Image 1 (tube, rainbow, N blue to C red):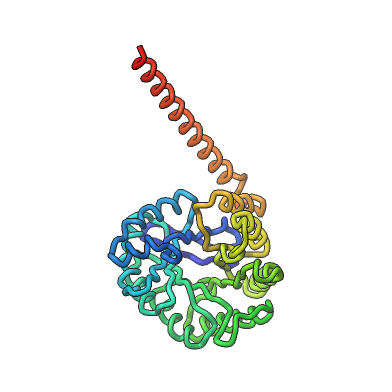
Image 2 (cartoon, rainbow, N blue to C red):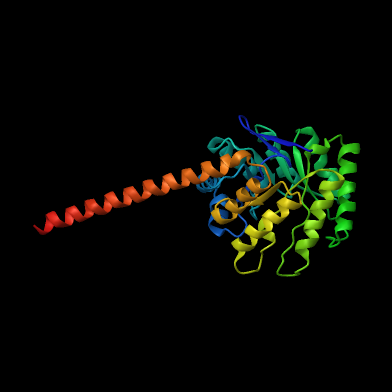
Length: 309
């Protein structure tokens, strides 16, 4: 049983097959968000407060932080974002960048034990990123693709996973527990066979190495209508196959509920206490909102009557 331990300055999150599914909130990312991109170019990080609050409220366990804005210094932006996010929440952070210099700067600024997103099986990327992972005592997300291809066959993905594990553990001394594999969840709209191929990959990873796994959950539904329904169906299937975390939008209650229901059904929520507590809190919040609305309506009605008289 592999346990990948992440920490902020004051909180620890453990990813593992015997633990509740780890929701890695994806929202702190400027991709496809022109307003956020414009603000970040001006050095304005104020929008991050809203993004952090919404992901925390939605039940995120870890926050993915990506500052890939064209025509900016990504390293400086990532450092600023890491510091700002750590002021706003005690959730651990997943540092998300393809720029080695940005990852190093972010790791140096981070207070805790981060997850690095990500490395591939390409020799050049392994040589550039794994030393940082070791130096800063981080964990790392690794994708089983290399300079030749993104393989579609599960066995090829497993062969590249084996390479990643070998290089990381034997050449860089990284603990096997600190390797989290992304099994390459692909858009189902492009090829209806990719879903079961990814599930087969997840099962193979669990059976051969017991490694923790993650994915960009929204990749599966990309380009399709009814994306939340597809994501809500996909994640419990992946969890049953052995997936232990996902980078996903915690603002979508329908999808998060599907994950937490699967936790309960898979035996990762003892006595259903988390499920019950969540729904009691939700019911209490709704009752309070209804009461406030009724009071406001009554006050407005009373005011109108007094005015008429």
